[in-house]
Length: 156
Image 1 (cartoon, rainbow, N blue to C red):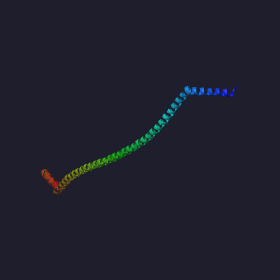
Image 2: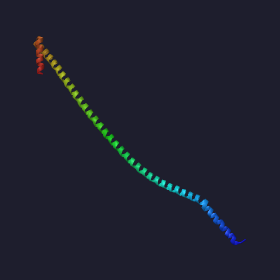
Image 3: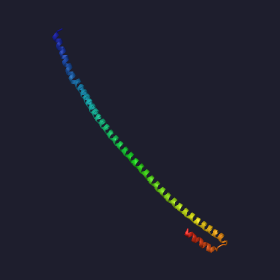
Image 4: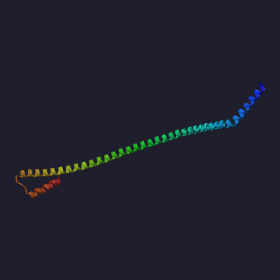
């Protein structure tokens, strides 16, 4: 066995192996590597885009939450104002009703006082006539009694 022939045979086998690999195997390996590189690149880009979208969503959520809080505060303020207005309206209505009842009661009281005065006048006049009749010992004419009673009632 000759060392040079073995070395030359191994060199030829290696060159054939390299050529075969470069010709038939290497393009598939490069294609797989490029495809994998593209997938990794797309994945990193998608992750970056997802992170940006997540940050935007957090920011939009904060804005919407702040706006909702403002709207809720406005609604509460409006409800409080409306409640205060209703209370004031109720107080005003109650005050007006109390005044109306007071005026009505005063009117009823005045009418009752007038009736009582008239009744008292009639009774006083009748008592006066009865007393005069007893004092005089005789009955006075009814027409004259009525005129005298009316006159006395007018004076009272």
